[in-house]
Image 1 (cartoon, rainbow, N blue to C red):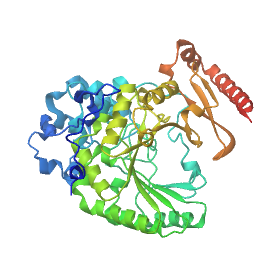
Image 2: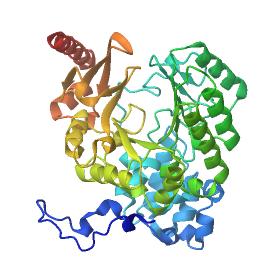
Image 3: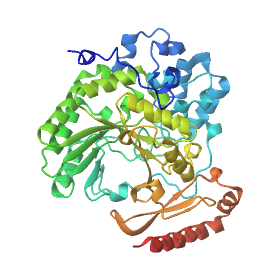
Image 4: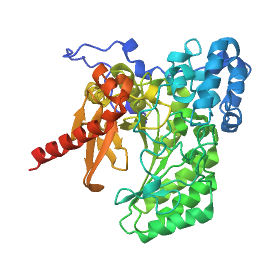
Length: 467
């Protein structure tokens, strides 16, 4: 029996509309890139669909250097652009790795403005000087690590990093201290797959009865072999205290072909999810789409494979200038995610990591965007905008700042359940501040004064709000 055969409504009269009917052309979130679009890129002109859908081909043919980028893109980009990329990669803290899928959806007619290019391929002319207060490990994850690759910050939750590689490398990675190959700028902390290191992490988790929620990230869970997915998942599920698990991966956004053709990996994840369900435990997949441009027909097909198996997918977005910082771009992303059955979960303020000030936005921009987006989709498909407080304060709703000065760009958060009686400071990018604020940051003698103003102001506001 089909759904349409349950009740015949074809002869029913249509009620007089209260709201104006939405024209089909305005349902832009349903318009997914399809066909053999990748053939427009010279390096992929002869690649058939079966090859492009092969996850092994995608991984093997990823762009890992300026030279390889030139070989793939050819005359679609200018010599000036290639020179700009070479210098940008030299200055970047992250090594470059971009899948053919991403390369094919970059707008090579206008690469400087393309939201996909901006996230993955650095160009020197767009780089800005770092904020004086940012650092390589701004979230201080290593400070909260009882053993390498395990961060225990929140009371009932731990972050497990079983490996240090990803299917692609994001320019803005908050773990640029560890992820990817060493660069001219950064010698990485190694978190390679190692069962002895994993066993130590498992032993710590088992020894802490308050730990109920484990995030498996990295690197990226996409790069875990199928047997590792089973091993890690089943081991954690066997611990009585663990009630929830989240496999975190950017993979569906940057290489959805793996969900379509890597049957062993999807089967392994399915087995862990089903075992969790049998035990009354929650196992989810968390992914990371930042732009509606990343969502294609391949994304829909890949996610559908997970949906058919009862695997729920949530999304965590990073707010980025020129990528999703307009109401139109963010709303389209949220609605398109919902269309392919991915729940928009978080939108993060951009972390304070080196050499990506061109991607950061102000806290005020985040606050404004949240108001514009809310109501455009159902509540469970509407993301919460958060600031992952530098220094280890954890995720705080952006509107919960105890202090925010739009001139200096300094905001202050507290995290009573995480680190009581501490203040955590976030900083708007200096180039987004008014002239007065930019002038104060240009004067090193003003830095401590601005911090003290923020501290005093936050404490006063906290006292005023006390019940």
